[in-house]
Image (cartoon, rainbow, N blue to C red):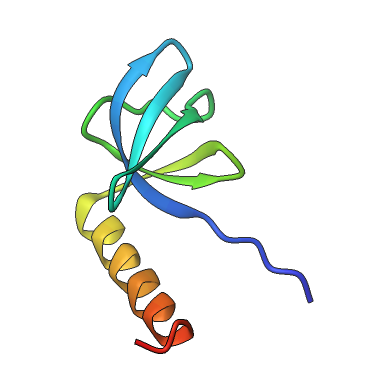
Length: 77
C-alpha cells in the first residue's frame, strides 16, 4: 500500500500564488498557494509543494508534535 502525507507549516510571506512556508527547525520552502486563500501567519497543510488546506494553529502544532514523536521513534531517540 502506498501512502501520501501532508505537512503543516506557517506562511511567512506571499508573492502572488507562491508563498514561503516555515516547517520548523529552520526548514523553509516555496509552496504554491493557488488552492487556498492563505495570508502571512496562517498555517497550511502542504502536499507535494501545494498548500491544500488552511489549518488553525492548534491543529497544526498538534500535528507537528506528532510528526516529531514519530521521527524520534524511527531514529531511535
